[in-house]
Each structure stands twice: as C-alpha cells, then as structure tokens.
Length: 213
Image (tube, rainbow, N blue to C red; front, top):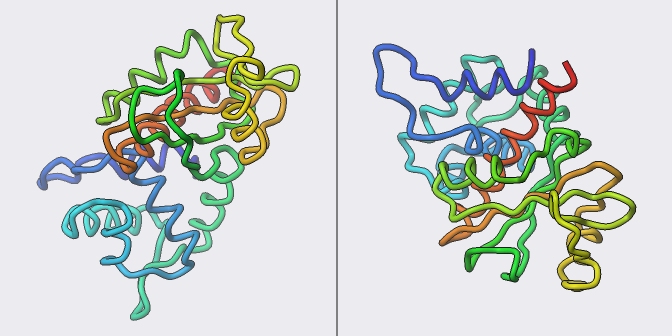
C-alpha cells in the first residue's frame, strides 16, 4: 500500500455522507498519536488533534476501512499494515518541533518539520507556503540543508550568520542531512501552525515522489 495514496483516500468523501472536515495533515497527526501511544482512545485523540469527536470518529472509520487501524476495548491501535505505513511515514517526515518567532516566520506560533531528501522538488518555496495557507495557517517557510547549512530557496542569505540561534536550534533538534528540507509552518495557534507545516510537507513529498518516478 502506498502511504500517500492511502492518506489521500482517507480524506475523501464516502457516499452518501458529507465531505470530511479534516485534511491530509490531520491523518498524519492521527497516525503520529497512535504511534506515540500504541493504543489510544477516541476522546484523547480528538482533544490532542483539536478536532470534534464526530470528525475524529469519521477519520478513524476511514483509517479502519483502509486496514490501517484496529479497535478493541482499550482503544485504537495500528494493524500490521498500519505499523509498516507509520514506519514509512517516520522515515520521510519528522515530528514537529516548536520554534520561536523570527524574521523568517509570520505568526506567533511556529512549528518546524523535517522532510527527508526532498530538496530536488523545491522550487521557490511558494508552493509550500500556499499549501499551508490553504489549510488555515498563516504561511510556511522552506529551508534546504546543503553544504552543512540551511538556506532559503533561490536566495544566498546565510542563516548560520544572520540567525545563528534559530539555525542551530533547527539543525540540532531535527538533525538534517544533505538535501533534506525543513518547513516552518506559522499560525494563529499551535494546531494551525502544525497542520500548515505538515500540509506543506505532504505536498512536497508528493512532488518528490513524482520527480523520482
């Protein structure tokens, strides 16, 4: 099963019901929480995802229909296939980390994620910004790790010199390798910043996959 095909299917409408009130980043967040807790209840998932219980129930139903999760008296956990898909996800996309506001960010809340080996799919970075804004975030900043430092796409600014504290925090906490990408999502609250960063990352990973194909 292809990870991103599955994630996209989970967000689709199941006729004749209403369109889901969640996006692909929420699916990723749900998988991360299930991976974190191993077995978790729906109410806890709902609270930590910032979604209503009805919306969370629908998301979990779609994941179960895809064979990704299973349920028991104790809660929701991954199936064998779900564990494989989560391992695939974690190999491509990191958990989010909080970063302070800076000249690079546009919101009070900022979450950074690492995308593995995707620099070849970066254009100007506007594609990631637009994906974040579409999901409800204020924007996203894309950084490429090259020659042992982080750089803005198509710009020569040396972040190691202009913003050393931010540069070092991102490098130390996310541990990027050559051609990895860091996306910083900004939002009016933490949830929106995280969803924005992850929607931008998902768009990038899809582009990278298409480029590799």
